[in-house]
Image (cartoon, rainbow, N blue to C red; front, side, top):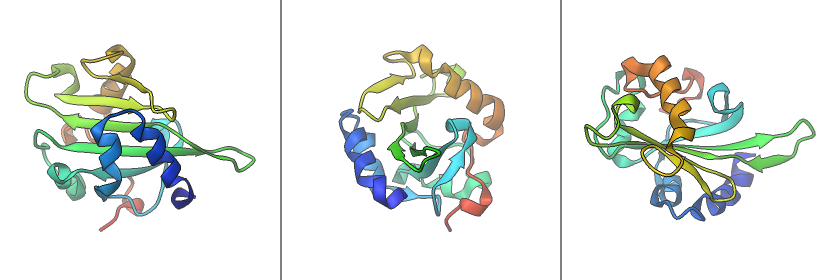
Length: 156
């Protein structure tokens, strides 16, 4: 299914004008297959990181990510009757120290299936994304706020 909807997802996200939304398909993918993420609305997701964020692939041993690391999670849904639809694109970008202490200096943003940017940390509609960093910080504070995909879905 992922391969069938990938072009549609990319076209939708590119409408946002966000350079990461356009570039992420060319980044390394760290998930073997799409898997259901309960923390992302029970959508099917895939995990990507840009070159700066390649340490993400060390998973539990990744440590603190360098400034400029960007993690992307595209998503799609499948209805009970089998209809497949584009979901949001979730982005995390490690910013310089002092960007936002509450988010551990991660900038969270979400691109909707229409291409509209729902919000971005310290930017437009920032408060709508507080849930993102609050959840990440509460579950993965010792992993630089990165939620790691289940081992069985990790690529080598």
